[in-house]
Length: 131
Image (tube, rainbow, N blue to C red; front, side, top):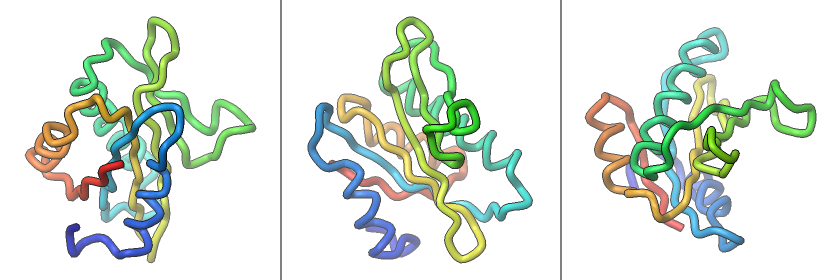
């Protein structure tokens, strides 16, 4: 576990991956974005989602956001396939100590290490969380 992430955040991210209908892995994206940088936060969320979708080999995806549905959290976004609205990834943007950390989770069949490597190569600070 990276020293960049506190134990509580790691524990909470891990809890999202608990056994359910699908086996999941995840990651925590650490950012310096504050509340005034919403457009950058959104663009980064979509870029990370695209990286996940590439390594999940799902084909074309789109982002469904909390602003699209009153039953969905405002800072919660989901990547779905264009063909049949299948789940690809989901995330929650968490404001912690003035900046955002974003918890993403996705099917464990996606290439977890390749996702982390690509995101780090793109300059992102990420911590992998295996389910």
